[in-house]
Image 1 (tube, rainbow over the protein chains, first blue to last red):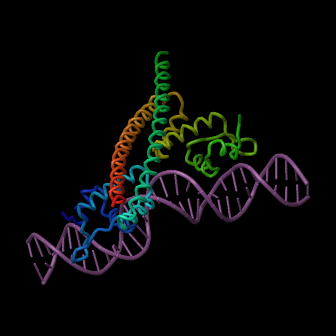
Image 2 (image 1 turned 120 degrees about the vertical axis):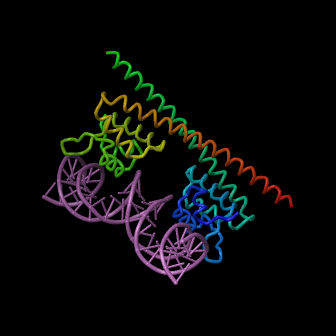
Image 3 (image 1 turned 135 degrees about the vertical axis):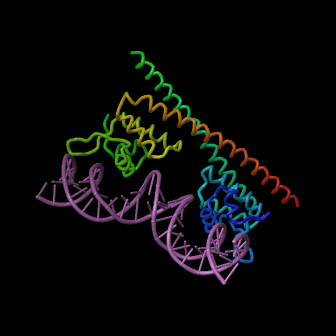
Length: 123
Length: 123
DNA sequence: ATACAATGTAGAGTAAACTCTATGTCAAGG
DNA sequence: CCTTGACATAGAGTTTACTCTACATTGTAT
């Protein structure tokens, strides 16, 4: 299947402007039809989903750019890409642990508030 | 104990400029000495630590501002502050779950890469 | 043929959260 | 006394990631 930028925008939940911006930043390079309109494929869809995953886990555009560049060079860059993912995985793991620590402290604070409020309403 | 902005900057790992910016945004309001220099206390230190926690868990400055405003009004705002924290807790929980989902997918991708590389080097 | 909606490009504008610069004050050491 | 270093304010500049505007083309329905 092929999609116009409007269709692709709906499929990905990314604005048309954002899609053009991503192309400008070389994250994605859809084909063009005879009248120069962008033609996105299902492969592009899978790729955008992956980009979104990287973004949602805190990878900056610059780094995704680097990954996309390696990807466009194909097989010879497989191991380098894997290293990027492994290092990102590590960062993500640390991020999750930190957040869980924060969650714990937040829970303590909430409990503290609960006691405070109880002791005040009891007056 | 009281601290100058320089000392406080080292204690908190926040730049002097950042501390002044936070003050400008009403996140923190240290006292001043006779010559108008900022005097941070241990209470300010605990408060900044909490601000950092909120920030690290994705709360925007505007919302921390709101929390700080309630905090400055004291006891009557306790329950409203607690509600903010509870709602933030919920968002944080969702964030962590999402990240764990992303982590899973990332692991799958890494495994895929490993297989690819193995099958190529075996040639 | 014509209107209009979707698309194209180039470049300007925005929002968040800092970060830095210019300029001035002040207390303490040489 | 004078310089120096930390601090003060006001406001400009930076970075990231969009988001929007202006204007030109093109495909489709009337």
